[in-house]
Image 1 (cartoon, rainbow over the protein chains, first blue to last red):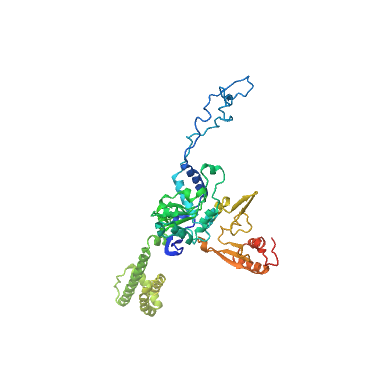
Image 2: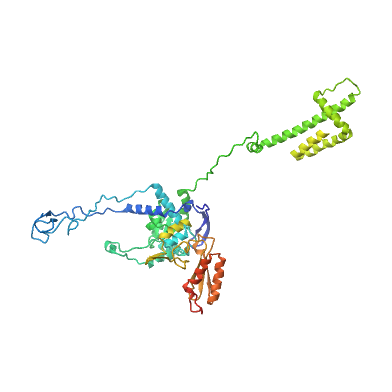
Length: 393
Length: 126
């Protein structure tokens, strides 16, 4: 099912596209189910039948009785009495002249059929969808080769037409008249005995005009052969798919076309099926932490910065303490306040200091400068480097 | 398109079933069998050949790829009125532009009856 809904232009009574556009209502994207439409048509057609049956008495208005055996005649019931041709003739049977038929038709035949409401609605939608496809409309037999667009939407002024002349002119401008001409060209008289039964004239069904209200349209269009008028709130499958064949050509008025979406609805918002995602441990997995709490990144970065800062301060203090201590060494006995850790640091420092005191001294200011310079860049790698540098010094 | 195929397969105003044969009188169907391949209406791109109105030459009818919902502007008609060989080559070049299957070309050039007109010196085989 294509979900693209193109813009349909509204055509003026001159057959030119006006500035107005309507998005194609979602109904026209319904799947086309000719089987459902056919089923519905077959059943709904039966609903406007009138009762028809033969007389109950037909063939029984005799008192015929069988003559029995021994009379060299068939044992069928025979009419009693004498004086007419009818006496002695057979009666009552479906085989007999003047008898009743086999299975006389009864008025309590099930004339009407009910169809599920959902099916009825589906069929209407399907029929509408089919009426929007030029291929299907043409294959149903409509001459719509010159029609500007399908579905064909005319401006609302059409609903105000009162004269058939105006209606005809509209159809001519919309190039829909070719189809109507076909009605004139087709043989009007019915084939068969229907002629004798008050069903003399037949006509093909051409366009279907669908309008929103009626301020005279019915009267304007009704005398044009082949045309049917429908109100948008009372769409009828029997009219939209005559004969059970989908694809009748429909001409819409703009307001009727716009009402389609509200009457037949659009699709519900698409619910995506979310598959079960493997749960990863945020305590171990950095990416998951960041997904759950994006602020965690800034927190960790801030802690790193803080740590480097503190470390730097510690280093300063340690270095300063060592310097003091080296000054104090000339005065024995005094122990530095730093403590065990300080001693270790001292040792380390001593070893490294011996390696290059001057280097350390020179490095300090540069080491100092480095973090201050590089702080604004906030790069973790360089932070690590900073750490290393400090350690080395 | 699938739906349309299903609908049109069994009942369609262009369908002819007589003499135990089934044909289709669709506008762009040249060989006339009723099948999906030779269905002149369904496909997005079709090429058809008709006789020109005045009887001189042929008209090549091409379906536009875009605007499928607008029957009035769907088809482009070009008239070719030349001798047999030139018409044929022009027709072939037009069709090849449409990137059709080679069989379709064959159909168009061989089986179209309207290519026999008085102006042609050679008649194309049927």
